[in-house]
Length: 463
Ligand code: OOG
Ligand code: NI
Image (cartoon, rainbow, N blue to C red; front, side):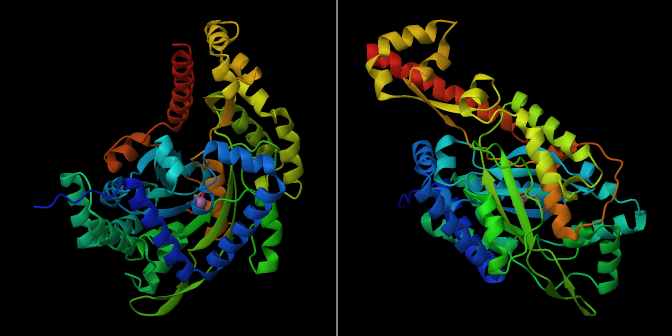
């Protein structure tokens, strides 16, 4: 028998994310327009701001930039969620983080499937925000039972996809041909189906309870509902979108514009009203939208607490939240309390950095090592001496308040439901069939690994 080598998980993920992007470009033409706009603005920024270009190049993020995107799906059952975990594992993606959206009036909780290793993230950080419907939050018992019954009957995975997932688990990998077959089969689950599984009256009763309920329950599969490219200047894109026929939501979610971007800023637009064939009538459904994002440095628990605190302050002033006309001004004012320099954020322990020995540092290894071992000096002193460089670690995850804003705007805006809910991480992980990784621990480990490497390099240099 021939020993066919396995294709790497990174390679399968890249093939899949390209195939998904091509499919979505066909299904939602405005996504193609957006990709072109993002590529133009990114090229402009790289040309006009050499510092940004250098920072990305040093972090090894330049290659991934135009490849980078995230998507989102919404699932109906524990079986769908746990099988999705196995499907993403083929592409080297693991569940990271737990997001409770019920507090924001959306009856779901979620995780993000994404790569976690430094190298895998550099190669292609493709992520999928994956929500699970919380049927227990639906008050009407008849409707709840009906919805549960409908989703229990569907099979969102093709036999071929299930077979190749099994094969991947037993053989430990996929050959080139198997990988291509897997990508094609997996893609089927994310495709839009214009045939609904229910009659119009059922759709309408679900829609009335919550628009999201109808979106999850009435279709053959969890159609990918958006794909989001990463921009280096979200305000520029926001300003240019109307001229390209794209109407974005009014406000960019997340932190304000800053010199040193933190976490994640996002804006979205409604893309499509689609024709749907119900079992008895023809109707329509609005599910799919567009979104762009700008990513910044990952925050520590301390930095995140400050971010959450400042954001809550702004949102509690006046009751219109991010819809208030002076929101942007108030946001900028509140965030004056968040240091906008990497030196300050690093020294105050607000954000995570990846450290590397510079040439100057390698030449002064003896002195650098002494400084590193001096408790009063440490890594910060080496950075101050330019013997060590500190690059911001990119935030790879999502923000629950922002996600809720995105859900609300593409579900039709005004509607607000109150759920008597609390986070149910244990139940979610039970349905997932695994624990969701702690994102803060991942960033802390990445920072620590880089510090260990600096230390090892210094020891090697003096040996
Ligand atoms: C997911 C919304 C969350 C984001 O970028 O925060 C999200 C959804 O609408 O299904 O994608
Ligand atoms: Ni999104």
